[in-house]
Length: 166
Image 1 (spheres, rainbow, N blue to C red):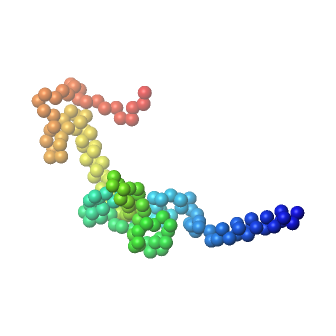
Image 2 (cartoon, rainbow, N blue to C red):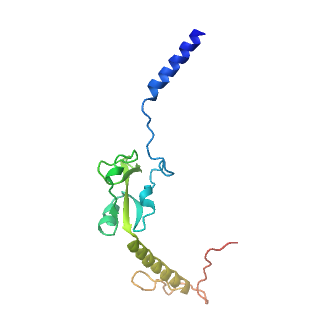
Image 3 (cartoon, helix red, strand yellow):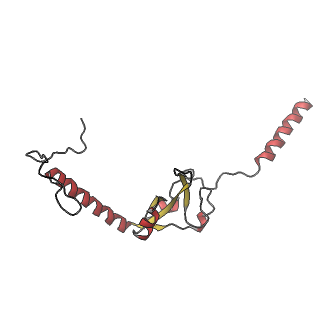
């Protein structure tokens, strides 16, 4: 009996030594384990829209210099285990490219009023293009008809059934 107790005590001692400090992050929210989750305190922000921007050639400059997206910088999130950058920008590892080099994703934000206006403008351009296709006279970006003399357009124009369910 004493031998069994000694083995049990040895197991408990070994388990206590191995356990050490718990590695689990302090953040236990629903999205804590998701790599590309927007932090909880930013998710319901009514002023900004947040987006993960993948670092592809030219894309970071295009969106942050020539568009209204800004990097999100939060010093208190720098200690987050998912953080891969050295600074205060919220950055995550997003895979590797063809050569095996790491690809990064950055959390960026844009004022909601700008984002909504941009989306309305993009939707208007798509609606105009779709209307032109339905008329049978699609136009290019300069407004010129792309239908040549040899094109066939039915007498009633082109009919498109959107969201068709058989």
